[in-house]
Image 1 (cartoon, rainbow, N blue to C red):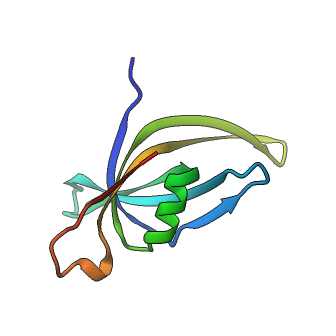
Image 2 (tube, rainbow, N blue to C red):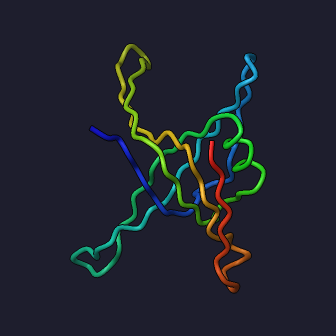
Amino acid sequence: MHNFVGLIGRLTDNPELKKYDEGKTRLSINLAVQRDYKSEDGLYGTDFIRCVLWNGIANHVNEYCHKGDLLAVKGRLQSRSYEENEEKKYISEVIVDRVSFLSSRADQTTQESSIEIVE
């Protein structure tokens, strides 16, 4: 069995880094990923996928990426649950171990550049 996720999408917001007492850093981002097919009304649908990055890779993405930037991420799908107001909630997210910066909004008129960051 293998748990592998690869996505290409645009950041929906500017990244925000969280630092923990143990020295770890965590970054949550949302990627807008366009679907490969059109709906009945002729428009492409978009999925908004939550991704989590840790430590070094989190620091790099936080430093170099902004809302609207195009990223390719590779990682694994993780499901977890938590309690909120005595109700159990479930969440699925991609734990990212590799990021490629494909372009930024400012770079859209130039060729795509790619820088790869590996955890």
